[in-house]
Structures are given as structure tokens and as C-alpha cells.
Image 1 (cartoon, one colour):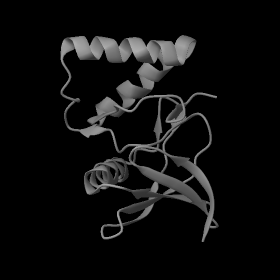
Image 2: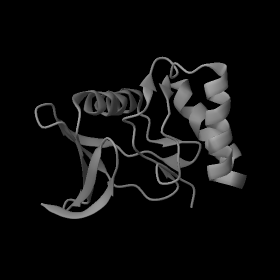
Image 3: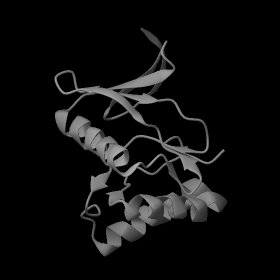
Length: 140
């Protein structure tokens, strides 16, 4: 049973359950498949933390409903992998990368170096985070 809305955005909606988990329903299959496959990578590699940040574990998924169920994690954490890329970084030009990083430095301020360490941990398992923003990467 769904309890309360935890978040929503361009790719879907997340609600808590009465099972101490969260369910994310996607609006497009490509978003669902990307996030599901990132969770598969985590599971296959035993990846549950990155540079001291918690990463939720996949509990269940439904390929027909485009839904994933994951554990709820406490800060510091990294969530929301529908914008991540597997095996290769996003196809950005050098200029786009510079603009992206400048925006993240403004968003995270003094925490940016810590966030970069988290991102490096993900890259070691060939998961390239793209939707890096407060809320998805929560330091405190």
C-alpha cells in the first residue's frame, strides 16, 4: 500500500510504501529501463555505498508497469538513476561538460568535492551519473 509521495519529476513519481520501501513509477519505458539496469549493475557488483553515501538496493521491479521498488536510505545518499548512463559517459561536448560542472559547483558549493568523490565511485562500476542535484545527492 502506498503511504506518501516522496518525490516527482520529469521521469516519474516516487511514493513510500507500508513495507519501508519506495516505489518509483516511470512515464517512459526508456527511463524505466535505464534506472532498472543501473539497479541490476548495483546488485551484480554488490554496490550499496559510494564514498560513504548510501545507495538504495533494488527490492522488486515490473517490466509491464514500468515500476521499481527500492529500499529507503538515509542521508548521505544517492538516488534517482533514470538519467545515469551505463558503460559510457553522457555524450556531451567539452563546452557542455564545463557548463554542467559550473552549474553543479553553484548547486553544491563547499560540498562539490565530496560529490565528485561519489561520482568517481560510480564511475568505477561504469555508472555515469548525470542528474546530479541536491535531493538526488543528499550530503546532510
